[in-house]
Length: 358
Length: 271
Image (tube, rainbow over all chains, first blue to last red; front, side, top):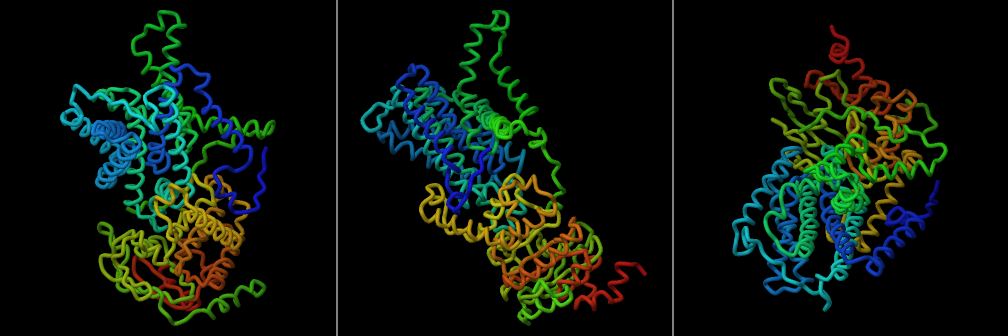
């Protein structure tokens, strides 16, 4: 068990608590930076996809895990980001300008959608976002001048600093870089007043209000930020799939995004990455399993969504805190060995809450 | 000041009481459906005093607090804080004006640590905006260090050191009540509303609480308004008491006066 002696308040503000953390995250960074030297281009592509999911997950985690708002419409922001980026590229804008512009555009759309939608709470808000997703899908299908309608639109090649973004190695590094920046920005947010206001809104709206937090504005900011990160992921996703058509972004995509943050572990940044690895690599794992499983089982139709669903249910029942929650328990077990008490993470009955004031 | 007997303590606190009216409510009324929860209630809170509201269950005490917090719209009447009308101020602006509160059954941010809860209490004092927070610019860091330092001052005042890093979910009830007061103090309020601070506390904790209320008034210069059931606590710390029953004010005055007031006795004990 590690005890950290704190001698100044800066230690409570820093991103890493102690040297051990700095070492392990540094090592992880070195591994992902050097991976292209040893990995096959196929795996580089798969990891780039994991990074893209993680960027989108950052957005959804801010909203679901930290602000406590469930969105079923985030595929729309992924799509808007992808289409906006593609449109800007076809207009001749360079990649380094087009991506931030598409991101900003998604943030603006998110804020505008959030203004009316966030007057609703809980399930009603989720339904409103679902409606927004359907509306934006309709617009994408019919605004042929920009989106190419049902025929879709090809994503032009792009270059960053003179090298091609669409090559596997280049794309891997671009996605990695964007993910690193996204995670850093989110960490910064969560250690400053804006991010804490999100958490306050999640845990108790009444209390947040009495702390002087403007609920409507805080929720809109969270939604806009969430849309921005998801749109950012969308603009990279456009390069990943190479050709945009409406069927690339469906309600199922929204649900997969939501599934990613739940399986990863709500309310943890590590959970984003775990969830993205899960979402990005599970289809590959299933495809691989098909080869080794007996033919009878491997040929069951709908094996993939079935396994997805099964895993989600198992998580909800046995580990609602997701992969990150499980990891924390394993770590504590080793920390406290042989004195680990099972009850440490027993969910506690919460005390009565104030009569709800609405 | 803690050495003296309890009765002399309320005197020490009352030295700071002035005739300046900090908060004034006149003719407040609100009803829910057919129930008139608060009817034509008027009172004023003076700077530097401890003002208590007592009354049987359903008297409308907490409703008065919720009216001050602007969770409810008053159907009639006005409220003024430091001379400015706050009857129609949005509820999130109330904190910035200098009114902080706690809740009857605690409303903490359950999944976060005591420290994070207290840092959220600094929200109204933030000077950074979204962009500087995202980039964590040097001034965002300076601000965090300052908030952290101030939170520690409150932790020192209320003896919360051992709970500092613990998530709220793992705290005993008594500690939660204190953390809520600590969080409210982080707002550096002029007026602190305590909604039944002693409910669920054992006698020893309640006695500690009375010392802390004295400290908050005397050392921090915060005016305290308190809803309470515990007459002992009320009598110990209050300068003035307002008794309510069925949404109306019965009497207002010094604790000893209220304890003997016939209407108050009738409300508590029946005819």
